[in-house]
Length: 504
Ligand code: UN1
Image (cartoon, rainbow, N blue to C red; front, side, top):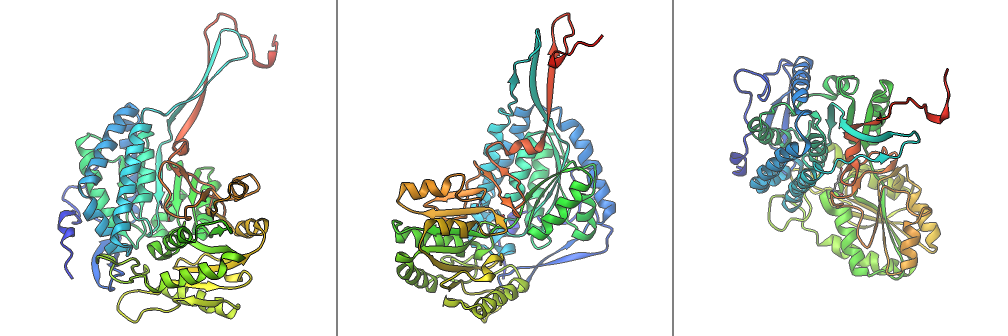
């Protein structure tokens, strides 16, 4: 297979004369082979960095930070605006590369690049809005305010499923905040990272600030471990499994660093008796089948009011049977492959367990007999909740159960280790508000008449409990990337003490 769009993206190896803004020759002697999940064929070989290169990258980022933090924030925003333009110019090619390396369909690949562009735009505006509060001092002729300064070097660790957008959420915000950063992408999707870094290199070299955004392709065991334990990186922003997040969070806490964690989800949609069944089917289909169920926001559970159960299950099963599965780059495909064989094994094991626990497969359930890692999107129905539905399987498996009382449905939806995304489909305003109130959904994201996935960048993205508590992207998530300073100024000629203390 030839992939013409790769010609437009510069994915070549190191240049001569390593320095800031160039690619280093690696000394590890190891490399990772990149296979496309489309048919398993090899699409690249990427040399892995060792700790020697890690030191060089940190040194480059430190040097870049010293200069970058002095640049006025709106001028930093101007560089991000140019980065956004560069992404716009290559949106199709970058989207196709995501499909090729990760397996999501073209529309979703391009959607992910659009998500990068959106956060760049957001960051440009934000660069003029890094506001601090002012306070009234209790002392006469005193003034108090708080200001925000760049935190320093940010370590960004990302997963395979959003090989560009999650980097962009972090990188765009960190950059306008005045930080420099080191990105360690998933070893399953290093080509996406290289394509991005090549664009970044050009934009930042032209701006005179090479080294603000750097990438290191290395193993968790050496580069990853060193990053999370490195005091020179005051903030580690990590996206991935709950197991990974627990490890990262513990290591960073041990050195009293800051971590921003965006981990797994076990996201449910609740459907009440007033909901529009057509909207439910469309919302649940995108939520559960989109990205082949490999989003942290993917819909894992569909909880139907008993009066809706038969109708919605039947409609869902029909919709699932017609999902075109195949090459994610081909026109008309709705579901591409899973990322690798290991994911296929987990998919099969989860279905087997679900059936053993009393679940009925009402759609899908099979691995496709063809090259690549293709499976059928699967629905498993049961009268009561299956134990397996407490676990996040990164695959298109949807568990459906009926409910009679909204209270029970909300309690059941909250009965998950993770707390990322949640949704209710209803036309009943009382039920909607019941779901959104303090004793309703316990997740970081709660939607009404929208599925659990596909959040916009303008909101803060993340969740509670085992999801890790971090918030990335929009709203005031930028505060995680800066340090806060409270300043008190005495413009009088007396020295009154706070709390009215008289001292000597
Ligand atoms: C993820 O799966 O890690 O809300 C991120 C969504 C996307 C981001 C998902 N905007 O589904």
